[in-house]
Length: 273
Figure 1 (spheres, rainbow, N blue to C red):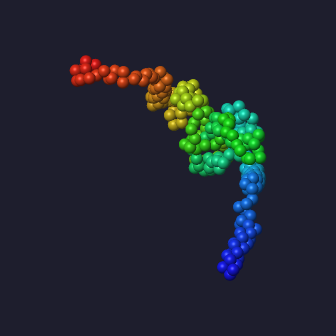
Figure 2 (figure 1 turned 180 degrees about the horizontal axis):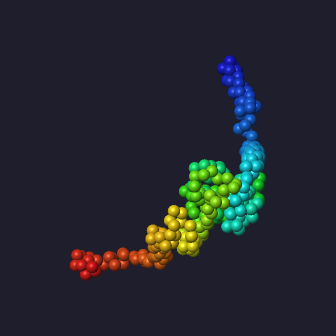
Figure 3 (figure 1 turned 60 degrees about the vertical axis):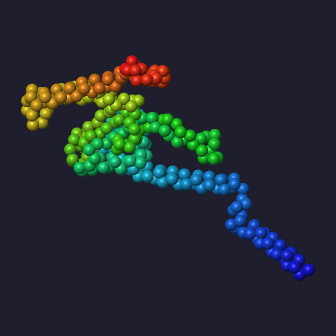
């Protein structure tokens, strides 16, 4: 009887322990439905997105307050070249993660170039049919963005600004100190884009140039003529290289087994050779 009592007591103790653990905080989290945890994570991610959007809005307004005549010059050139409105370009610039590169470009002895790519980019969009689970889908969409030119593939149009000196760029000198140009390399045709830019824009501009600085004779100077000849020659080489690449010979893959299957001895190999 005593042994039975102890046995039953042990069972009772075990059951009471199980019951106690079932009502502890740690155990409750394990028995909650999975959907509750998912909903909680979605709520948190939604709150995080709202906070990030709030911070981004504050940053945009701070940058908008910094915009002056220098920025307006860049914005107007980009709007004209890429066929966007100035308002659209302004919104894009102040929303860009690399906005600080513009300030570095304006600074004395700052960046020598400022590049913008305008091309198709994979964008993450919230799936409207599945907003409750926060899923997204990728879409190709034209996008204008600031770049260093070495981290993204270049497949569209490049708009560039070049400094002509190390002077600080101000609203009054930006049009004299900064040159603007565009390179159209749609579908990744970089050689064709560069050839067109040099042959149709750069060379005609150089040949119409009247002021060559310290060179008083201008286009009559032998060094200037030699320089222009070198540029012309380079464009010719570029053009022939592009044509060679476009007209390259595609070798057809041949099933060699058909020809070597019946070769039995060295004389057969000699005959084939």
